[in-house]
Length: 493
Image (tube, rainbow, N blue to C red; front, side, top):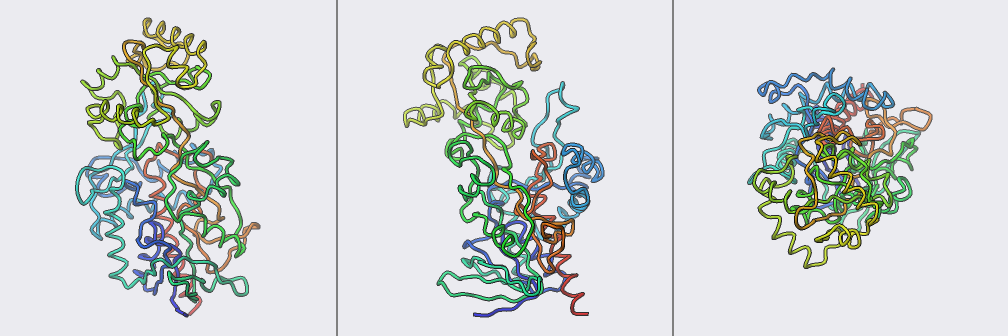
């Protein structure tokens, strides 16, 4: 079968939908080749994108400007990323939120993902950039962004965008160095050749490809890293781009931390995200525990510990305190009543033999069950409790209000692992999202967006500007849609 369009978008995730809608709004005919039987990809797991300068922020008296965000981002990354791409993304992001609202997307408001403790506020505080999508039902939380995906899919359909479901792209067609089409295969195995004036790659990285993760990042999926692995995100777009001559950038993991199979143990995971006692396998503290709300920093810290694991430990006195007063660290992601649910969920997971957790009545017993060095743990607990009695953490200067002695009643322990939202990078692009060769030559007609090409974070996801990956997906998609239309129509002139 042969088809033709002005623009072909490879995949209908968040960045692909943004690119397709933008191109169609600017007068282009668009075909999207989507591997799955639905749209949205990893965005269906999310809560909302970054935006700076939106109507919502102005209504909530958030004064952060795109220029301020740009400077903070560039200082965070030590200017080792494309300043023009970062600049254009941030300056577009507020208008993109308004664009979404105009197509019917509703937001519950704008918030930051975490608040840094007073001592480190100047270095790592979250900005109010995260626009959380209002779900179709229930309270905001993981997956509430599906309401945004639905509105975008409806808008694409309204504009005449043709989405070919269960039709994965297999190859970018290149003639005389220019992208001219896509080869895809439908669910019946029939080959479809789609000719076009421009191709936009938006396949969402390779988070569901353990081999690519191991080869390009060194992590082993399910062993040294537990990342979100949305089915279908196997690096197809990256591979096709490289085969078409695209330059390579580092593929990195968008680090955070989590427990194995966390979505099925959500209450347990949330309950341990508190400034209790955190130690590594050697029984030593390795981070001021009041910093763990920054999940990127915590994931980084765990990644350099023995066996890339850590252990969060609290006692019954802490549990009762949190049940009565709520957690010391407030989560926007986990349910607000999780401590009311905790004991039931804990007993269920313990009975089922969920490996990361254990309980004990003594630290000696806990060390043996968890696999922590016993003598070192006992020394750490003794030192920690002495510091609690004095009200001062002379090791890491953890805020004194979180310095509660440990060992009062039953002990609860949960092993923590390096996690990731997925992969970032792989395809080299410029600020126009045009794909570049290794020697920085533009491949005419070829664009890449979203996490396939997101190389603007340096070594760490900037959790201080939350909603960033979804924000980059949306805005890089829109930038690509605009530039692809300019390219094809310029060729016709």
